Structures are given as structure tokens and as C-alpha cells.
Image 1 (cartoon, rainbow, N blue to C red):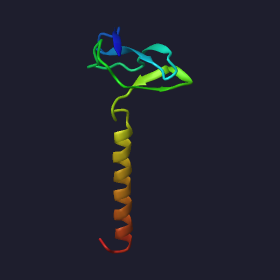
Image 2: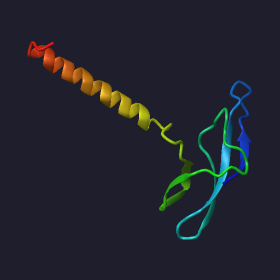
Image 3: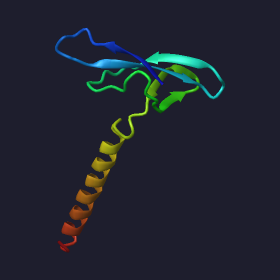
Length: 95
């Protein structure tokens, strides 16, 4: 759950870093301030999904729902495969 927001001190960067609290599977309650600022962050009281390594609970992060670069990675892999296929077909004089 989002418990607060830490506003950026930089007037040219109107972002906030969400502060969130979660309970681990072992029952430990942890509160973390996100390392990443957002222009439109979740608001206090909002429930969010948290990703964390049980050995490094203080490095937990809010699940960005595919906005963490994984979608871009899939797009780039697909584009690379397409270009490779076109290159092979061109070398075989099929295209």
C-alpha cells in the first residue's frame, strides 16, 4: 500500500517517489521509498503489487506492469528476428 510521497527538490523535475509498505511472506512489515520518481505516481492509500527479493527486502520496487523495459525488450527481439529472417530470405534469393 502506498503510504506517502516524497516530492523532488528539483523545481525542473516535478516528480514524486512513492513510499510503500508491504508484508513479506515471512510476516515482516517493510516500508520503502521508491528509488524512481514519477510524474503521476500512485496516491497514498492505493494498493500496488510489490516485487522484492526476500534476501534484499529494502530494495523492493513497485511492479510497473510491463513498463520496466521488458515490453521494449520483446519488441527489439521481435524486430531482430524479423530482420534476420529477411536477410536469410534475401540471401537465398527468395525475396
